[in-house]
Length: 386
Image (cartoon, rainbow, N blue to C red; front, side):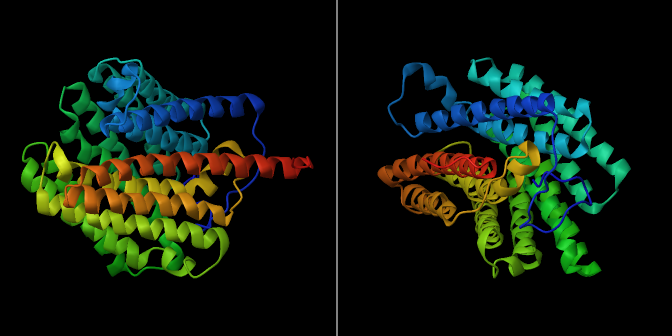
């Protein structure tokens, strides 16, 4: 999630470079980003529906598609757009376009298999993007990210086939986990990991991939094996990622490291829950499994990489400010409330409050990021603040 082509760029404080973008190209990127933002807002609305918050009747259908809107509609569009920008070829932009259209179909109430066709097309295109990257620079981290793209495609095909969303969730998790893990593996090269350390990464990633694959025919042992692999990946990243050094720095460097380390902790929690509970399709265990991974890990990654993503995709600076720790603290504090008191101790009030605060954390982060970007733009143009 760095917006860089394989092999290019530096560590994760990871400042993005400048450079001009043609107005027509920039407008296209903004349009694609807006498709993803629309899926995000619809997905957050769906989460409020699921939490039992009174909402307009016309939003009721968004509850059933909440997870798909957040993972493929929002994050899928964002990640595919990043990869298209990094590759720099016109056809690659069809990947975020297809993902964004899939989200749009869900918003307008189309059946899941119909949206799944658009998501599958996006998955095929994302795999093609990684094939193009492989021809430029073959690498282990590129292969791991490509495996994540294949997981997206398989999840979308299962959706087209009519499989229920809970059985697809491990594939969506694999898409996001492998995308991030591959990116962090690339950056870990700065620390010169030994061959043994890299082999351990391959081993735990292999366990995770094998477990997710097994869920198609044997959901219970498959998910538990995948959970063990997820724990292994979290431990590997916690020990070998660049964040172990950068967390001792200051400013944006430390902020990114804190976001990532918190995310790795939640990844381990999600893996432990997969091992302990196995496959569940509803109830507190299902909520805890999903949101430890997709909120605690994935959204923490989004918060941490935003100062890199926005400049890379739109050439719009997102300057660091300590105020960004506020939505980060709200996100993780609310998640503890939701899972510990809500899911584990079966407190309905804590579950609902934690969920609503999770939504508030995301909206607060978006608002703060927009404010910081606008202020930075005005400062660069010499426009006085009011």
